[in-house]
Length: 507
Ligand SMILES: [Fe+2]
Ligand SMILES: [Fe+2]
Image (cartoon, rainbow, N blue to C red):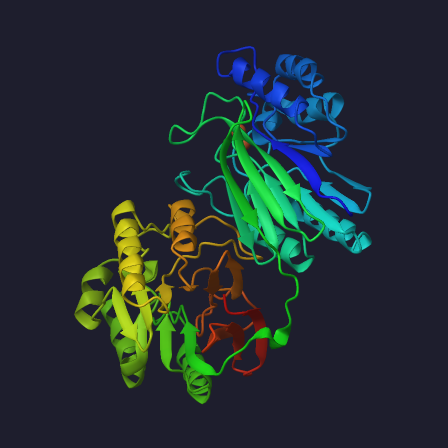
């Protein structure tokens, strides 16, 4: 790989003889692709509108006009409708495949559930991906494509159509050093750098449906031998809408965690104080002994202090946390707001939105609402948060910004994405665009961390509830150095065993 690799990435053509298909936009795309020198093309799903045989017949004729040295075709949820997944295999190609040529590996996957909009990879596709990645571990460039998105996409509302096992796929891709991921589905072009992996979503070339009046578009991607990735998002006639350049460092070393001690955070969640939680006080006591032994500057509780938000639950919780109240930051979880929970919460706790500490500011974001597991931030709060971050950045540029919330934004391995944040796509974009340093969450009982763009996202397990999704209870210790490096470890309770979850050098 001595020369840059040039890729045409297009998606969501939604071809049908009916008016939902914008034929003129498709013809423009066709001409632009044929006039654009490229090494291969990736189509990331929704070739047809309804997966009907007549649509595949029509689409097959149209796509034959595309001149591309190599074409990779990935199935979308619309193609899987009406038994279309079988027609796809007969008329387009396999739904799961890999290709290795000139040191470049491409894996194409089917993330669709027939007749459902939502996605799922499933155990077999996850195993297949792992197997191929280990077989071609020496490949110079590793690329993966599938239809559904992996991270929440802006402007797409309630996150109900991401792949339910997105967390498992994300961890496989990060663990195996994938260079770029190509997705479609939401008809909104978007690019994220997640650690050293670039996740590229294409808009739609020719569907009647686009978001926020956006133009129909596709991507032209260039990858240099040094793995710098340039994504030009262009309209169907090839005019640039915007270009995003992502550089990959890959020179990461553990010792890159520079600087002296600045701040140590103990992050916990899901204490779930209540009557049906046996052994819990014992586990909590042991957990807090371990927390104390790490000598944190601040203790952050990411929600579900109580089991049911009952008065008795709150009384136990208040008693348990009184010794730590000086250094405690708390945000509510859905359990805390059940019944009269919301009223009780304000009786027992003084919830403030912003807490300033040394050179840092913690913004407490209540994402929970009574009687629902689904979280929401809302546009008013999003705007308030953006104003706050920019305002405090103007006052002191070096300020460290952390957000404390209950619901997670990044899919977590070995959990099902069913109760995420309703407006996760917009919130993730807002937090990464404003370059918030750290986002803490505590949903689903499992520890996980990663970094998207310049923002580290850390989710923690429950410290003392039996409802953990992990083998043992745990909490996280987050060390931040004077140079801004972030080291995240998970401490198991009761053993005290420490697992490193992530090390992120200073930005
Ligand atoms: Fe689509
Ligand atoms: Fe789709």
